[in-house]
Image (tube, rainbow, N blue to C red):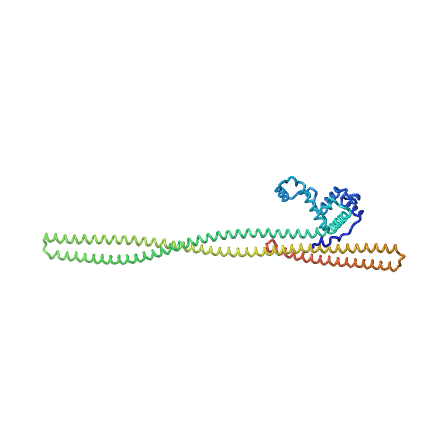
Length: 448
């Protein structure tokens, strides 16, 4: 059972004159005849509830009879929607009246009270509505103050949410940049692997060229030795020939034959020398090619070292990005925790407001009960005064009951003041806690 059902009869039943006077004060026209015979003035009663809804709930007549878009969409799905053009607005009006009476403490309000009202129930309904209006007027400053604090907290929460969205966007951007850097790092590592393969291939080629170069050097040295030996042998042969020429009798045929043999030997030696020179030239070209290959290999090694340095820088940059990502993740987590704490504080504020409203209703019930008891005691006192003939003892008893009742009222007032003071202290404690949390949130998001 909710609070409105539990205290459905907590409000005082006002007299007709009081009801008409209070309605006139709030600008709602209604006559005594309409109050006594509401069944004959159904339009006036209907207009009365329209004005009460406007005064208490802030819903004007045009808005009150305008169906919601969802209701219009459902009406369009009916077989004959034109038959329900006015029924939706009327149904919304009836539901709003039931809701208003439920808030005022009337749980049995229905369509009969609108379309076939009776004086007794209408008086009860108007007493409840006027009691609710009085309560609204009394508590409006406190509600405005609490609502102002709530709006401030909601604004701080919205700022924290916006800051969280901004940080999340920055985190997403950093992640995208990290992914791009990671792809670039992968491409650089791939290029480095290809360069390493090329360097390995060049090293193997250099080793084979070096081996071939050593072999060619040995061949060249052997050829040079052979050339030197052949040259010495040729010189010795020439010297021997000169020596022999001086000793041998010259015979033309023999001389021609020896000369021919020497010429043939010389031509053969020239051919061998030319072949060896060509081999030497080819070997020099190979040596030059090997030198150029060595220079290119050194250049490739320098580029590899540069690429390795760039790779090292990319790894360092990747580590920095990972660190920034961790910091952003930690900041986002702290922001989420602060937002959750702010939402918990908001829920605590809502529960505190509900508790305050419940305490106020309980106090209003106690005050109304005490007021009714006081009125009953006063009536009894009047009856005692009228029946003075029954004795002063009965009068004294009634006065004692009245004094006890007044003491009870004073005690209830003191208890109410103590309750209000406790609630005010709780509210101030909650306010300090919220201000501290707001400061922590602002520091966490870097606004201070």
